[in-house]
Image (cartoon, rainbow, N blue to C red; front, side, top):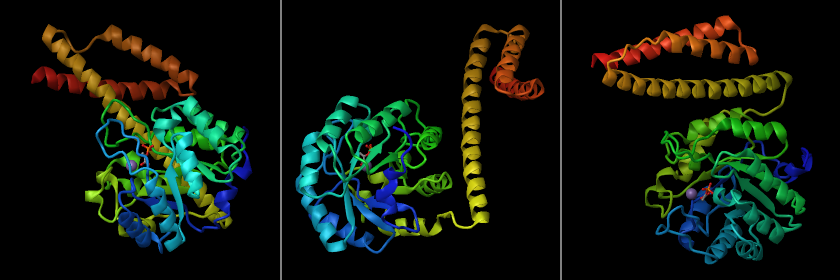
Length: 360
Ligand code: PEP
Ligand code: MN
C-alpha cells in the first residue's frame, strides 16, 4: 500500500475548520446516559459520538459492556442530535450488529490490532464497506503490526481509513497509563502522510490533568483529530472513570488549543516550525528520561560498590566506555569533541550520585 490521498476523503468531506473531534463515554451504560452525553456534545466541535458497547477488559470482573442493546441507544442519539456514531468492533459478530444498526464509523481496539488473525476476520466481514474504519495502535509498540492492520483493511477494499494513536503499554510505571512513544506515530505519518491520524489522549493519559498537553502536542505534530472520552459524571463512570472529562471541559480544551491551519505562506512556515519544535521537545523529554534511567542504574552500582568497599572511579572501564561511545557517535555524525563533552558530564553526574550513596 503506497500513500493514497483517497484514504482521507471521508475526513475531507466533513469540511471542518478544526481537527475532527470524536467524543463520548468510554462505555455506553444506559440509554439515558448515552442520550444525555450526546445532547451535551451536540453543539460543540464534536462531530462523532463514541461509546464502547463491547468492552475488552484486561482482567475479567470489570464492566464488560451492555452489548448489542447499546447500538439502539447510539442510533437514537444520532436521530436526536444529528451526530455521527462510532463504536469498537472486535469480531465479525460485532461487525454484523454494528452495520445492521448503521453505525457510521467502526473502530478497532488496541487489543485487537495485536492479532493479525482477528484483524483478517474483521477485514473479511467488512469487505468493500463504505463505512469508515479507524484502527487503534496495538498495545505493544510495534509499527509493523499497526501498518499490517491498515493494509489488511485496504486489501479488503475498505478505502475510508484512519488510525488512532492511544499509546503503548510498558512494564515500567510512568506518568502515563500508556506511553505515547510519539516517534512511532511520527514514523507512521512519514510513511502515510495522507492517512488520517487521530489522538486518543484519554487512554494515553489515564488521568484528566494531562489531556490538554497531549492534545496540543498532537496538533503541533499535525494530527488530524482527537478522540476524547467524555462523560457528564466522569467520577461515576462505569469504566475508565479517572480519565474521562465532562463535555464542558472538552469545550474549554478546544478553546485553549492552538490550532494551526495551513493558509498563508507565513502560516505554513509557522506550522513547519511548530511541527519540528514539537519533535525536538519529544526527543528532549526522551533524553532526560534516558539519562535518569542511566543514573538509577549507576546508583545501583554505587550500592554494590559500597557493599564491597570498592573505589568509585574505575578508570579502565571508563576509558572503554568513552572509546566505544566516540566510535558510536562518529557513525551517527556526532563529533568526537561533542561526545567526549557529553559523556564527561554524564560521568561526573554519575560519580556525584555514587558518592552520595557511599557517604550515606
Ligand atoms: C476504548 O476506546 O474505550 C478502548 C477500550 O480503547 P483501547 O482499545 O485503546 O484500549
Ligand atoms: Mn476507555
